[in-house]
Image 1 (cartoon, protein in one colour):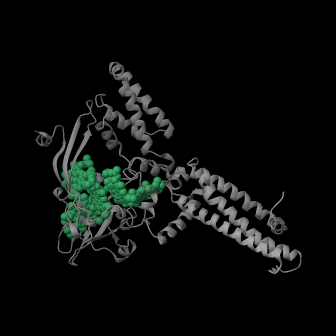
Image 2 (cartoon, protein in one colour):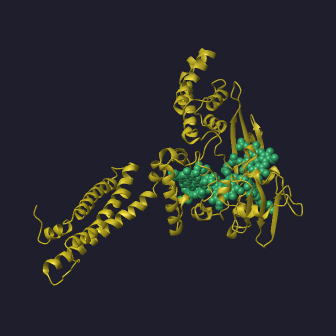
Image 3 (cartoon, helix red, strand yellow):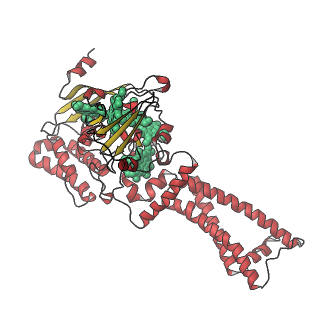
Length: 472
Ligand code: HEC
Ligand code: HEC
Ligand code: HEC
Ligand code: HEC
Ligand code: HEC
């Protein structure tokens, strides 16, 4: 091979020692691979997260290692020749080498900064967060993709802006990588996520707490577990409210997070379910402290729980990783017409199929449509014949519900991650609004039903209020 003047001498010097040869080999090969894969990435031809790891993390590492070997080789070579590293700039050969060395250094710096930038970008991508540790993240990634935030990058909520958190989470990330490698992570991942960044610095980058949402008119449709799958409706006006600062005195449910108010609380358990101490700080500086049952709360507990400032995530704990309950999942599928309510007893059969024990997820997904077919064929062959298409559709729909909510590899089943946005199972709002929290002067945290919503109909078959509203 012929090199332009200076190159061959330069290369000869670099590779004189075997370590130098290795260094040049590693940098060259990793550079060529990096450039090629990065090119494919830019052209959108490469989407595999593992190849991404190779491109943006492994290859730049090899490149850097190769570069580091070169000066080491120079020193080793000099030692072998029993002389120091001499640079004589009066010699034209040496001058050319120095120029080449500087040029290559610039190229290396460019390559390394592109790699570093892309590497950071890549480890921030949904692809990296959601797909690399597939088993661990599969449930959250699946739930996220169906959610209202499916276009919001994981890092907007999990890291947020600013360099300090960026570094903190990357360091934290390293221990997570080890947990995955050595299979020591918890299944399911425990919640609440205690080191999640406060919502002020994540959610509130997109949603303003000052915004007044007003009242929200809600119609919830549910279906009985009887032969007719009887449809019922709950109609309510939910007082979401909010506001404060410019937009007026805060009220309603979003009163808690308005800029004027500070609500802090302490929980006796890791899950933050058993809230024993709540403090409200009002705009005029006045404070009220409520404790569960009016009992004194030990200082050690207050210190341990750090008196958490209530923020969006204390209610919206499932803004994007939204799991269904079997009842609600089926109700929604009926309401949207994906399940045919004319199929006799479908709600109760669906519930039964969704909550049975199966040897594996695959077995469940295979059994669900088969069991449905069998049930209708045996109990009512005429219906089965007439409604074959609906039965098949129901099989798929119930399969989908199962697939989206049950992840045996992570021990995630129904109700592993309950939502705090209501008071099913007496959790959510009722952690504080159960009427048990009392202040020193005997005030209670309000628990009357009207505090949060006006119920216009509760589980009625044909609510009169809807007729009134819809009448011309
Ligand atoms: C809209 C904001 C938001 C986005 C976007 C988001 N998350 Fe989350 N995530 C949260 C919140 C809030 C929690 C904390 C839930 C809790 O503490 O109960 C959480 C919790 C988690 C958990 C713990 C287990 C669980 O279900 O609570 C994992 C794992 C997770 N997120 C992964 C991801 C991944 C991967 C992505 C991107 C594919 C992502 N998240 C995108 C808000 C978000
Ligand atoms: C990067 C911007 C962004 C961030 C960060 C973000 N959101 Fe959102 N959020 C959105 C957008 C956009 C929508 C509207 C989605 C739509 O209507 O399709 C939305 C919708 C919502 C809704 C209404 C959901 C519904 O069912 O209609 C809630 C509640 C919400 N976000 C809460 C949160 C919470 C809590 C956090 C923090 C954990 C958060 N958001 C973080 C952009 C964001
Ligand atoms: C005390 C509990 C609570 C807190 C704290 C809270 N929210 Fe909400 N939020 C709710 C409830 C309940 C709803 C109504 C849910 C529904 O529509 O079913 C709601 C609705 C919303 C909506 C949808 C409004 C609409 O018009 O549909 C958005 C967006 C939202 N919240 C964002 C936030 C953000 C951002 C924060 C933090 C600044 C926050 N919330 C704090 C309970 C809360
Ligand atoms: C950590 C405890 C806590 C939780 C959880 C909580 N709240 Fe509250 N809430 C309070 C306290 C404290 C007050 C104010 C009591 C007072 O006036 O001193 C309050 C007040 C309210 C008010 C009246 C606001 C006004 O206009 O003055 C509404 C409405 C409300 N909460 C709804 C909800 C809803 C809905 C949820 C669940 C999604 C919820 N809260 C969860 C502690 C909590
Ligand atoms: C602290 C606020 C608060 C109080 C007090 C409260 N609720 Fe609710 N309630 C909510 C919220 C929030 C939801 C959920 C709305 C949603 O799903 O978006 C809800 C939902 C409901 C639902 C619909 C259930 C469903 O999801 O299908 C019923 C019924 C209901 N409440 C009845 C009551 C009754 C009866 C009382 C009085 C004993 C009461 N609530 C007290 C906040 C409250």
